[in-house]
Length: 300
Image (cartoon, rainbow, N blue to C red):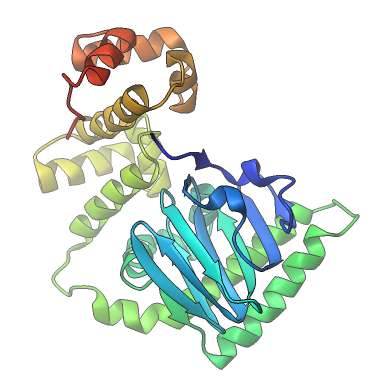
């Protein structure tokens, strides 16, 4: 069975969660992760800061030991399998949607490098300077989350979150520079970012213009880069990733075709059915029966 997938909004009302928004989740002090996160896939990136104690957290089959003064970061789409915390553990949790992350201007030019760094080094020990700044930002975010005055609250939260992201970039900038292959061209970096975005969005990107906007490129420029790097058009890969996600839902979930269509961003069930028919030669219902009978294969 497919694991549950949660957005930041799904954690409204969870004990210990201070703030839920369509782009942000924040918890100032948790002993362990919310129960519904365990065994589930997060549709947002997450940073877990250990203020005290230790925690063993298993993400995508890998176990990480998080100690005082360390931060564990992972990207959208990760599956949390276990969280074992010491009796004195005190964790700060922040979940960020891709839209919120990409709105940070400094990330526009280094987002691929940052994403690659987080994949390779999910655990990071903060310096004294970063610890001091992190404490200040967390306190301010916590105060804003509980302020009775809603005026500009979201805007101020965004500013403090951007400050945290800028601080992290400063911390790891030299390590990123040293780890980035010197022969990696700008075009190949952009191509890798293109595929990273398709993977992180799990088939929810529908058009070349949509991903081009995320990359601050024109659709024409992006199309030229992907064609030069792969020999295929960007829409070819966009449709591949869309069908991978649709196939997984049809094969393993109990969602109706209408629910899957809505989840994947189709404007109507008819548009969804037309797309699946174009890609497979079958209606969603026919394709689901074939998959569940073991006769279909997940698109590669």
